[in-house]
Length: 335
Image (tube, rainbow, N blue to C red; front, side, top):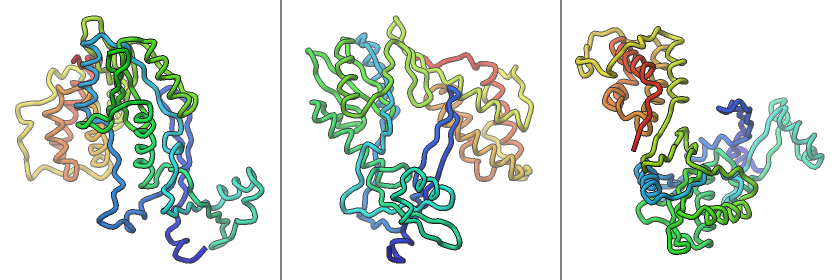
């Protein structure tokens, strides 16, 4: 490899994640941050995801028409797609990871070299590995091409919703990277669709019935054609994070006091540790408010403007929101 190619090589990053069901999930990905410095103004690597408005609209249509639903995660979503032929992406494994690859496949050992006293292995990336800026777009192209080959039409207003007429009724799929939700009035049609998806993308767990998980939302379809969106698990996580710093008043009756919009420019700023926690908790609540708890939206929208300059007054306002959420944690959004 030339010095320039080695300089552009991406470092391999190994991540271990504790899933909500208690399983440990590990993956190797690329640190693709340096790739952005090589992009020109004409390069496009953006990949769409389903809009919240589009997704909720498909839920409402499905509930109103009495459709059946299935949900599933596409396994190894990015790795299903190939890297563009005109792109050379190199991945660098260092130290113990390089050794482990040599132990798994002896062919790698002859390519292991030393840099600064550490073993290094350079490999060519041929699949859309997590972390590379091209990967999400390559995966999107593969997924939409597959759906089009099945006879689906991509919705012109939301590029992550597709529709197909089957037996005179609409079969709809909405997706966010690897999370997918599909609906049709006939469960047998969904069974056939699931079988085809498994043939295309490999074995996967298909969830049927009235209750589904999608991007942290527990979605329930009710007999009265309403939909519940439950994010209790995420709220509990936020409460635990806040309780590391402060007590909570579970008797709080409102997420906002009359002084919510009052700003005291002389109020003492939070220390670094609390400021980081304030930023983290507020960001998580920003995600929750748009999907499952719109009743805290006014308060969180205000605090989100203060994440870079949070003070003790802001912390008290956040404490009030957390107290309200703890008191109303069983509440769900109904649409």
